Image (cartoon, rainbow, N blue to C red; front, side):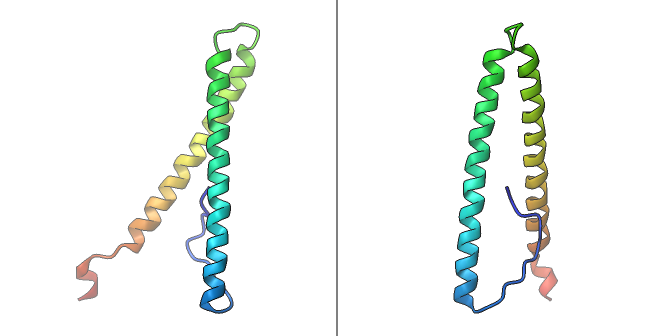
Length: 95
């Protein structure tokens, strides 16, 4: 999951900045990998239990959870796209 802040302040020298950003990237990658595993598990559960009358309600509940996760992912992607769009400058901006 991406951090929704656009600007972050770092104290210390450049070496410390690199160390902190590397650690942040590692944490974000682990969170992303865990999220992808959770999505796969939920999807598998829903696929297997949707047709079974005894587990249909549980599958419906898991589907709602999966929908919320996917909405969060979409929102995060939109924020990232918007921040990339705002940071890109055209050549006419520098004239």
